[in-house]
Image 1 (cartoon, rainbow, N blue to C red):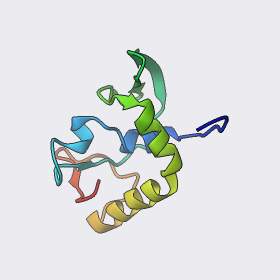
Image 2: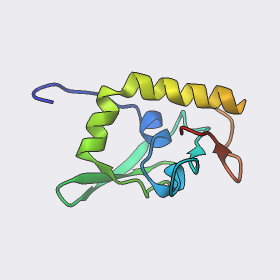
Image 3: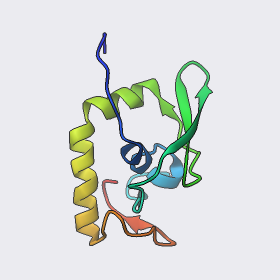
Image 4: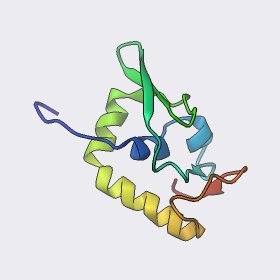
Length: 109
């Protein structure tokens, strides 16, 4: 990354959380996240020297973001965001819709 700096939006980080709650335990088990536009990060905890664990304003706190994953999110942000929007469209769900109790499924997110 050198001396470059990047910015990641809170909503982007929340919908792409690496937690099992969002990602599932294998391919096809992802839960499409909605209603996260206004989410913020209320605190960040270090995880060793290799990651951080943000605590989001919606209570989500199980995602461990490695430095490698954060960098991947930075350099692939445009494509990942488009993938998220495509999943919303495929699921027929609005980005601001409240989360369904069982979540929404999307094959790639």
